[in-house]
Image 1 (cartoon, rainbow, N blue to C red):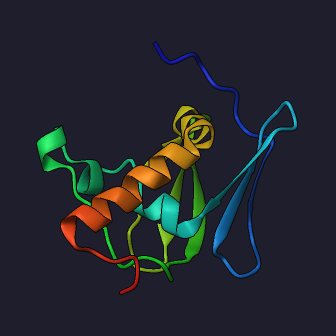
Image 2: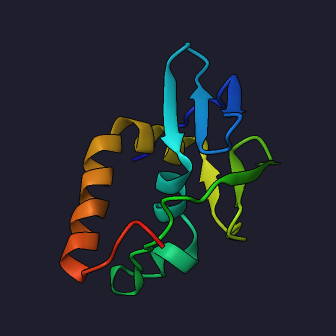
Amino acid sequence: MNAKVEAPSELKVSKDRRTLTVVWADGARDAFSAEMLRVLSPSAEVRGHSEAERKTVAGKIDVTIRDLQPVGHYAVRIVFADGHDTGLYSWSYLSELGRDKDARWQGYLDELRAKGLRREA
């Protein structure tokens, strides 16, 4: 199952609010666009409660990160400029996202194309 992931040593939002860099305890870094974090949010609003309920979120190419709010010692809530704030990004989810970033992003792009949706608003 999921191994416990140590908390990052730093979470850093870029000056333009479009990128979150996660610096892990071992010095490794993952950089995520705000768009990617928004469209792959772990929230029930996006993921649903089953695969059939999962939504493909389009039109978020220009979304930015408004705020980061710590949640205990295991996660961060990301508040996006479009008002979305219900996803809790656990350290294990961010670690998985970093590991599978290219495949998950390509899957998202493929879904958009298949559904006739666009990244632009």
